[in-house]
Image 1 (tube, rainbow, N blue to C red):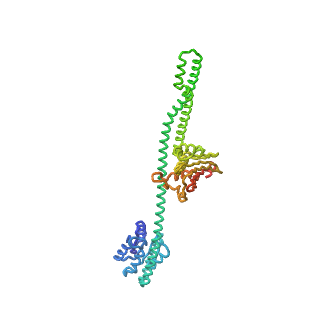
Image 2 (image 1 turned 135 degrees about the horizontal axis):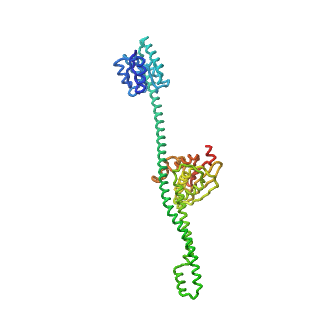
Image 3 (image 1 turned 120 degrees about the horizontal axis):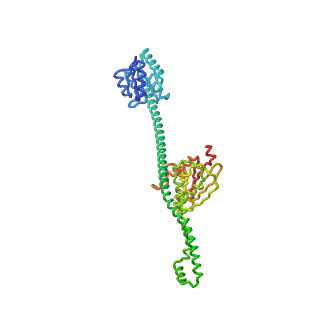
Length: 444
């Protein structure tokens, strides 16, 4: 049985090594760093020291060097046991500093106990004399020691920097994901509110439309009755009060009212129907939380979105439609409506003065394409490269979150499509969305 000093700062590794040695019948003493181990060894000299290399306060290399410089400890064999310093240069330095073995952690218990028995046997066979290094050799060892430490520190710094960079990317990704979830929840809440408002508007609009239709029919009947009554009165030439009736008819502008009444009712019905269409578009657009996919014609989706965004567009731009004959795509129409709305609003906000927004659709083999082009101020190349990044915005503070295009790009990717941007400063910007038709999507 030998008295062995274990020097290890990690509790788990220290406990495992202590257990292995005790089961092998050795008397074990533990220390958590080189300084504590040196003090313990000087107080009671061990038969063997097994030490880690990378430790706080004093590392294993320095412990080895100081033990070999101490007259009472220079004959104590030392095994360096490390998982960090495993390069050939580092192992060579440890042996030059006086260690008799250099083992890589973790080692199987049989290998570790075998090395310990070999070292203890060698110690019993001969009394090892400590190496006394001449000054120049001591300086060489110190230089090698410093070089190893520097290289290891540099590697650790690079590893730390890599970890920091990965953590930053992870935090940015989580921040973007959280913002998108919040945005989607916000849109879902707005959708529920809009659907409720649309429902409340739709009910009275039903009464208004129905009543206007009935009023139009009643007006036609009144017009027929008044015409017949007028014919009967004028047929009686000697009817008293005929002149007074003519004067009253002209004063009250009965002929004008009768001729204009039908036109007023027609215009009111057109207005009511337009309100109903807007309400219907609002209800359709507001269901952004609907997860089901269905066949949809993107021309119809664009018309719905244009109606919703019209108030943002009509004062700053002229809208031109160039809709092609396109096949249906399998998609979530409400999510694509959100994409098209973002593109239309961005196009309007990109123009400092009155300009033109062109919405175009066309088909390619296995794809349906939509482009939204404006004649605004355009974007430089460095902005184009980052325009789909979360939280990136060129708008003034409070004017944008930098999430609109990021969420749009994410929606398009979920539809197995792609969104691209081309722009020229001072001339305008074009966003193009390409979505697969059903056959292409089923293959993916």
